[in-house]
Image (cartoon, rainbow, N blue to C red; front, side, top):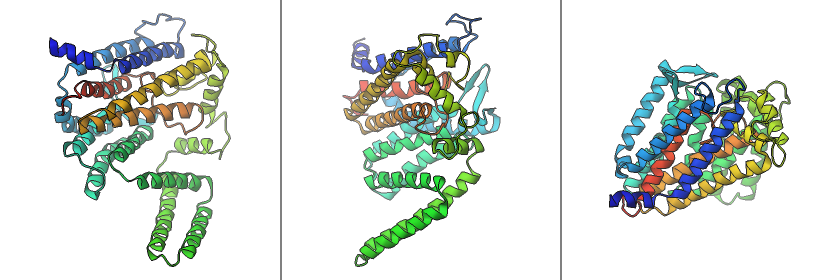
Amino acid sequence: MKDQRSLFFNVDWVIVLIYLALCVIGWFNIHAAVYDPANPSIWDMDTNYGKQFVFLLGAIVLGSLILLMDSKFFNSIAPVFYGITLLLLILVLIIGRNVGGNQAWIPIGSFRLQPSEFAKFSTCLLLAKYLGTNNLKLNDSKTLIISSIILLIPMGLIMLQPDTGSALTFTSIVFVLYREGLSGYFLVIGVLFIALFILSIMFNKFLVIAALLIIGALGIYFNKRNRNLITVIASGVIISIAFIFCVDFAYENVLQAHQRNRIDVILGKIDDPRGQGYNLNQSKIAIGSGGLWGKGYLQGTQTKYDFVPEQSTDFIFCTVGEEWGFIGSLVVVGLYLTLLIRIVNVAERQRASFSRIYGYGVASILFFHFFINIGMTIGLVPVIGIPLPFLSYGGSSLWSFTILLFILLRLDSNRMGLI
């Protein structure tokens, strides 16, 4: 009994309280988003908000069970979790149900399991086990290659569904690699390639290539006595040109039409508020109409009359903005930022490398979902269809984020003992 009391005493209850607050806020906003006057009760099990309550109870049970487990279990079982999720990602390509153009769900009775959600925490666990077991650092090519393979396998399988949004979530784990010794040059190069990607889409590719050749020629001219630098500049220009052609090919032949259109809307290449830009336009109208204090609970007209698409899942933040206004939105954003800062602090205080690496993985994934989801509802990033953690409707989403977070809480509660 003493050990159990010690366990729960060491749990970071601030994180638990923020988690519960976000889940409850999500439940009430799902009720508002899909409110049906014919079924007004928030407990009605035939509605999404009734089902979300069941998912929430299940999440609390899952979190409690995780806190009762031996913290060493997660280190030892990491390869098994990873292998199971890979099998599920393969299985969903064979027997999965296609919803909205993505074959991402395995039907289990009335419940639909989305393996890509659970692949996030299993990938974090395996990466933490690989890098943490021997305190490896990302300063040698072998470690970097193996770490990249751990990330790229689930990413590739998810892209085959195709679920671009969920696949892109794994790119956030680059922050984990950076914390564990990856050179900052990789981050700079990544930012440059993102900029090159945007420029390649916005402007004619030959115009961008011409600009690169001019910049490269000037760089070589002003550094003509430094052969090493000349080699670096020339190699960079060649790689950049090859990247531009790859972007052009992928944009025209890999991305689906609706994905290209979403990017074009964000970049201002097309202005189609009644067509491709409809989702984003209605989202911004809903959030803006909330004003400072919002219209009030169940009073959102944009939400009530279904102007906003996917309003209980990907666009749940629209309901927050419309009904609770700027103040309510600020409270939700504040809770997320407090949670993220707290998780980073928890990760940094770990004595075991496994726990620290996993903690940064949790922070990276939650930050990506938080930033991209809210960013796409206000027009900062393309609409890629990923849930807002703990707020969006869905059992797979809520349970996977719960598992992701509560494993960290369990590892943290045992931080004085090395794993």
